[in-house]
Length: 347
Image (cartoon, rainbow, N blue to C red):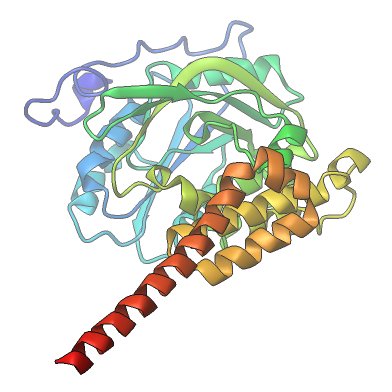
């Protein structure tokens, strides 16, 4: 409860500083215990936001919570903040790891809940989210993932928008498009033993990879409720959409090396790989590596020219434009060099 936790920072008010979620009943309506929910927060040098994240989890009023924090060896005040809330944590550690995927996996391997999720150390749950999630899992026992909407905010917490929608496997593959709002996504832990945890070779779109692996085998259920807030700031991964897309090629290659895919999924192989190569080209264009960008654009064109000339026309043209600009600038440079040399000779 609010009165049990450390006092909020000076000048902080509202959720989750001076407000709490009313406690849900000790048992569910049918008399059974609430399912144990395990939340993992991976963190590294996010002391500026971490305390708000922690409080948004602990003040859910949910009676069966397991909260785990995996810190990657922060050098700011993160450890001091974690220690303030240690009495209410199931486990925490601060040690060097190999990245966010590794940290999430460490937490999930320790988790014992029937339902698991991860909440990044700059994001928040909205009041009452966990109670609603538990009820949805009870109503949909066949589903592996239940996900809702996420409010996006700026660094100061001002709302910018809302995202998250139903996750359709075919349309997602067809455009390498992730519509699951990760901070509002919860997983039935038993299915992770079947499909595996996060791919630790991925550092940007590892959640998209997990959704695909899960959705191939199990149904998802989408609830149009706002269960979380995602904070966008210069240091957050969410602020760099191009870098997120840079994982798509590896993800699609892995997907299409999986046995037992349906005919419908297999029929989209070339389109999916064409989109992934276009995104790769976009990344190389943005980082001023035109040769690699043109290569991936060419591969995309060979795989599915319709993607390049219609749906992905903007990305394809962007790569070609980069080539044209590169050639044009090279020509200008040569003409300038000749002019300078000519003037030098006149003098």
